[in-house]
Amino acid sequence: MAIELQDQTRTTYPVLRHQLIGELAQLAIIKTEERDRLARNPATDQLEKIPNGINRDGQPKFKQELVIHAIAMPGTTMEVKQGEEFICPQPGDRVRLILKGLAFGRFLDARKTHRAGKLYVGDLLITGTDQAQVYDATGKPKGEPIRDQQQALKIPRGQTVGYYGPIELAEPTDPQWVNAAEEAFLADQRAEQAARAIPADTTPAASRSYLDEIDF
Image 1 (cartoon, rainbow, N blue to C red):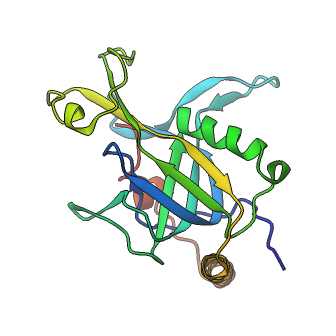
Image 2 (cartoon, helix red, strand yellow):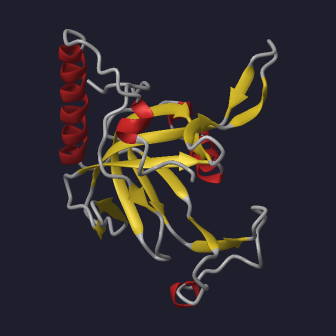
């Protein structure tokens, strides 16, 4: 029976990084998790939520990001950072893809036309990198998007650069990867149930798992 995908709790796995024009990620989705974005406040050197206006009830809103937990499938060339090195995950490896800003919006647009908005464990997510954008000191785009990796390599050091690409959702065609995603989903559920019987770790979540992902 197909398992409908609902948001779950956070688990730390390597994060896929958009950084080379022409790279590709083909992923079998395990689960998704929406959370507040954090940035380091240079005045306090603390991680803080990023303000994003006020709700209708007068409460402050904060910028959000979407964490997609997934299984890397064959054809994935996008890399993850492990320690000080970047490596390409092997088929079957667990990874995360963190979507924020424009990328988050593209995911939401793709979901609107995918199964009437429903996601299931094992659904296919395809993304890649097809352009780089340089930004000025105020965060505004500087020049036209760059669509050639050799040209991107010529960007001077010290420039702020973002790498972007399309996002596509599709129904799975290979039961092997659906099974792998479902096994990971159920394993996470068992781990979460076991964790409820253990005293909670009081270390701030941001200190445990955000340090390689936040906006500095």
